[in-house]
Image 1: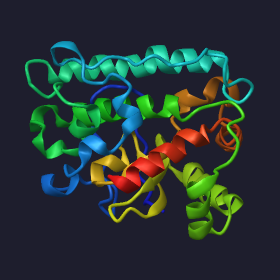
Image 2 (image 1 turned 120 degrees about the vertical axis):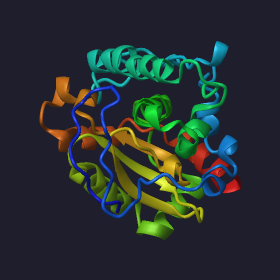
Image 3 (image 1 turned 180 degrees about the vertical axis):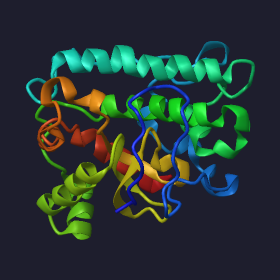
Length: 256
C-alpha cells in the first residue's frame, strides 16, 4: 500500500502539493515515464483531451446525472462533473497559456512533470492530474456493474486470493487515505497489479504506473449524500464499478 500524506484543502487551485515520505509521488525521469505514454490509457484518449489551440476541454459525462442512483446521487454527479472537473480544466488551461503543453494528451503531460516549467508545475500537477483522474473516473462508473471476469478476475485472484480479499485491501487504501486523494488499482512499472493511494490529484501515471480503477475520496465526491461517512461511500462504490471498462484497461495496459 502506498504511504499516507498530509491533508490538502478541497480546492482546484494551484496550492502546494505535499510529497509523501517514501517518494512514491516524485516525478520520475523522462526516459522511465514517457515510454509508451501514448498507449497508457485508451479510455482517456477517447475523452477528447488535447483540444483546439492547445486547450483542454471537459469531456461529456456519458450518462445521466442520476444513472448511478442510489449509490452516487444525481446532485453530486452534476456538481462533481460540471463544477469541480470544469474548474480543473479551466485552471489547467490558464496555467499553460502561452506554452505548447496543451498540444498533447493529458496523460503525457502529467507523466513528464519535469518538462513543465517550475513556475507553473504545481498548478499543472494539481489541475492536470484532476483533469486526467476525473476523465478516467467517469468511464469507470456504471450502475450494477457486476464483478471482475475473465483474465482480470484471474489476475485479481492470483494476486489477492479472491475478489473479496481485493475489496478488503482496496477499501483499506481508500479509508486510510488521509485528507483528499484517490485509491487505485493499477499496473506498476513491471506490469503487476497493485493497490495504493495518492494525495490530492496525483496519479500512478506520474510514477510510471497505469491506473485501472480509481476511487475519488475527496469530500466533494460524496459529502452531499454520505457526509462524513466515507466508508459507506466506499461500500456503495463497489455496486457502481464498470468492470468491463477496467478489464479493457487491464488488457491494453499489459500490452503497452
